[in-house]
Amino acid sequence: MSAVCDPLSAEGAVDIGLEAALKSAGRACGPADVASFDVALTGAEPLSAVGVTCGKSVRFGPLAPGAYEAQIAAKNTTGDVVLQASCAAQVTPGAVAVAACTTL
Image 1 (tube, rainbow, N blue to C red):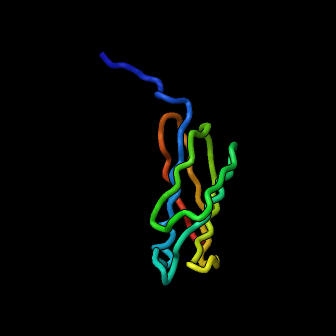
Image 2 (tube, one colour):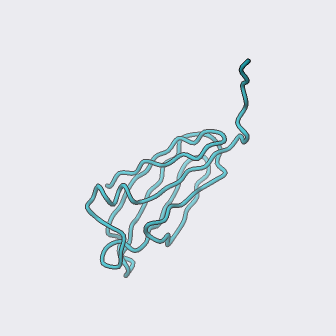
Image 3 (cartoon, rainbow, N blue to C red):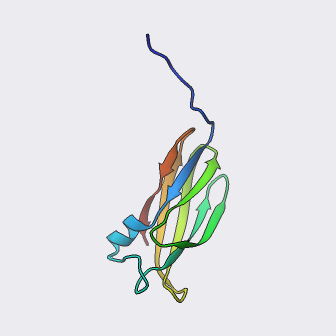
């Protein structure tokens, strides 16, 4: 006998991190390179996070299911933007989507 279950939640979430984009650009977290980043999430519910410590990720949720995009501005210790990235994720009910980011 098999059972079919509905998701525990009708909403989901998205995690946005900078590591993959940094690695592809030959950059790294640290006082001599990238210290923090800002994220602006667009979609049905625009959200943002400012001054996220490099090496950490940001989780936005709960979010309605659907496609979301984000823009990242990575900054050095003086606040200058040293790298920009664009991210995309598909949020599904009851799950956390990990955004795929590419440098601009």
